[in-house]
Image 1 (cartoon, one colour):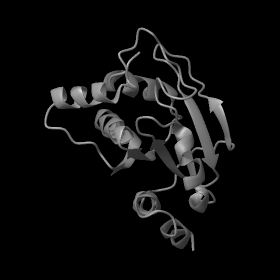
Image 2 (cartoon, helix red, strand yellow; image 1 turned 180 degrees about the vertical axis):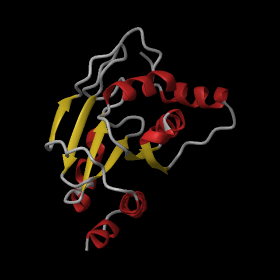
Image 3 (cartoon, one colour; image 1 turned 60 degrees about the vertical axis):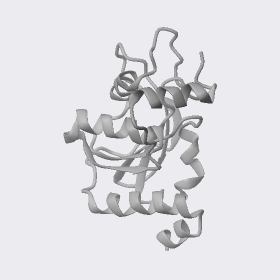
Length: 178
């Protein structure tokens, strides 16, 4: 079974995909036709930067997969094969990651990430799935537009005592410096 192939993967990943699988089966099918499997820049012109979207699957249930720090939308490429026949998914490279824009004037904060996603994601109701930093972005996006999302699955959400502690942690990584 598809769920059996998911469980054969690493345990944390199995939990992640199993949660998305269960929730996606519980939501109604999307009305819009599925996009063709590909990787392409997103279409709609807006003031916010448009993100690069990795698109795949062929089903009627929609998933938006948001990666964590240090990753890109390709993170999900080998993790979705077991559900590709009945789910379609969009995995953007978040702002400042992978093939998405790296604007010099952006703050790369939560508001910038949400605005870029709003400008980039195709229309239609979907389940948001976020890993680590992508989980924070997914929660913010769903809070801003709850009518657009069937739910949120958050995996390995980073937790800090305060925004100051979070900023200190990011600075300690070094990779976040421009």
